[in-house]
Length: 124
Ligand code: 5GP
Image (cartoon, rainbow, N blue to C red; front, top):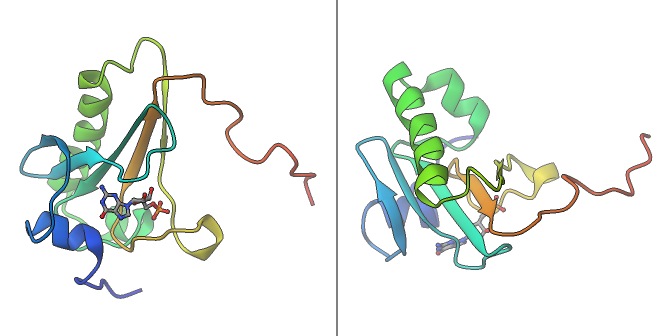
């Protein structure tokens, strides 16, 4: 899938629309989700034109991949989530309901988060 630079996170990266920033470095930007699904719900995005995890890990320079994942860990640490626990999640494509076609890792925390996925899955 080609990268569409009109997506909302590209606009946030370019400073065209605001975000509630929690962290930024040369590789990454992290900000609060506009529609939080947990007491803490932060999105971390890489500074680069990548739609998904597959795209990013196949094509991004190693320094950016390292910098991005370090940022995810650092944000969880700075948000005070490490001791109690937290969840990271990255949706990709239709089956996962990815809404914004710019790679983003969700960080959820601040409460007991329940089962990882739909517990009604029967295995078929
Ligand atoms: P996805 O379903 O693509 O994994 O998640 C996209 C997330 O981006 C959703 O949780 C949604 O609430 C969030 N989101 C969509 N538009 C905006 C926005 O303009 N600002 C912020 N901060 N979050 C957004």
